[in-house]
Image (cartoon, rainbow, N blue to C red; front, top):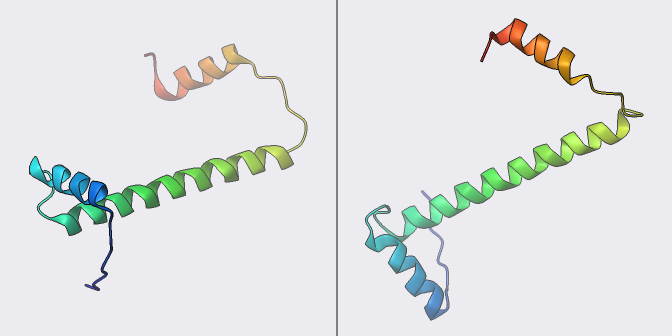
Length: 81
């Protein structure tokens, strides 16, 4: 595993140490890896939303939505809730 040194202001260092106190993370590296994974998930989710918005924009004029027909299709496919 690669090593990286990070400098933090004292309040941020204190915050990280507080996060370790409850035992959820065994050390600072675990906490930082957790934060990076969460940020990666956030960026991926934002990218997916942006892609969906872009797809919607280029898909043309909006079409009316028939909610009753949608519910019937869902019930037929997935059964009664």
